[in-house]
Amino acid sequence: MSKLARAGLLLFAALLLLAATVPPLLAQEPGCRPLEVVALEAAEAGAAGATIHVLTGAEAQAGMAFLEARLGPWPRPERPTTLILAIGPHAALVAFGEGIQVCLMLPMPPSLATVLVKAARGEPA
Image (spheres, rainbow, N blue to C red):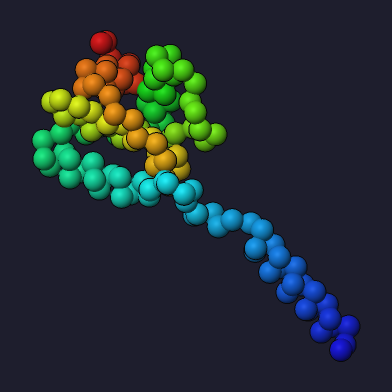
């Protein structure tokens, strides 16, 4: 085998090893759901009468600060970048978007969810 062929095989083997050790960028954790699927479900809940709020950027950070002040530190390694709230007359649910996935959803009373949205948007409670 020529030196060029051997070098090519070594390079190919190195690339295979690298591909096997690096997880895909769009991989989801077990138990997580795609953010777009949760957003579609929220839209369906909105069509059924729930009030839907989507908090991103500074609003999501303010919402997280509000929740952490009341519930304690965030339990997961990645901080949410999107909060999707569905508020109904008797219950509310907040979905925490971490990049392209939702790995945690938290039920809460509608009154707390409403105060959360107002706090995140800097509105008086």
